[in-house]
Length: 403
Image 1 (tube, rainbow, N blue to C red):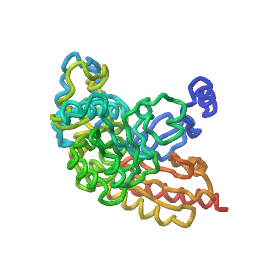
Image 2 (spheres, helix red, strand yellow):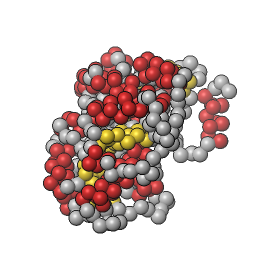
Image 3 (spheres, rainbow, N blue to C red):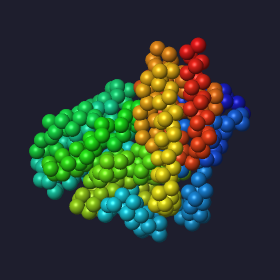
Image 4 (tube, rainbow, N blue to C red):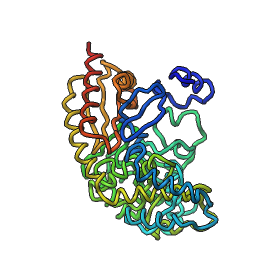
């Protein structure tokens, strides 16, 4: 097979249709650019949904992976290995927490946080057995497991997969009053994304995260921040919560923690929270494996310099200024923070997918969500010149549809 059409035909015929990809077959990548099987280059403005914050083929991350591959890749947690202690201490220090519980995927990390919150509620807060509830947000996206989709308000993610897991209260995102009204004696946690990515890069009102933090403290409830997409440099700080100087009780991390090389996720919290998990109560054969830890250790070292956070902050300001200039020219609204933007396309002009395809024809890869929105999240290594060129391509695509 050599052509795009051949690869796509075989893929569509032999795999489940749980995704609707753009018609491109990527062969290799470096930095912020990818190349398809026919040699065409594209600027990656999706970054694997923030998994590639540090770019494709980042030399430090690839070097760490290559070195570890020649030594040891898997032990299971039945034994210690020499990359684990550094990983646990490093990620704990990065998040300011005592303890780390590693898993593989983001959904696994969210499930872990849910289990920890319930067990903490029973053993520490004193909630009656089987009565714990967790407050979650409308339009959330935390993964695709049966429990997680039980509290999704997205019909595509939710409908047709019941019976559903009980124990969740869904409230309006961005409303502290909605959370306050939902709290009862059996509430053990509030689970939220500091910025809702899949919903269209929705940024809550200023002060919202601080209010959630204050309410959780006052009510003896765990604040769980799902920073899987928003964390690790994407928004211009290490974590999106940092923008309001908020420290949650539990961080849920993934995507960029694996450097775009291997799936790595983790929950971090202090000992009074994560200490409720005892041997045999939770685990993963691959969670915290030597290869994953070596890669994550390189990511942590990168983040400890602060260089990527500063770059996302600076380039993000440029990106948002340019995007706001397109409002009224086919763009209705621009949202986001740092090097992450949700762009609402005028639905009378085109759909988000149509604009994504038009961008692809111009050498830019982006992805639509919820009909009329496209998300832009290039690797933080993107150059200012390439970033501005990408916005120019968006402007050109909009003009094409405007006629």
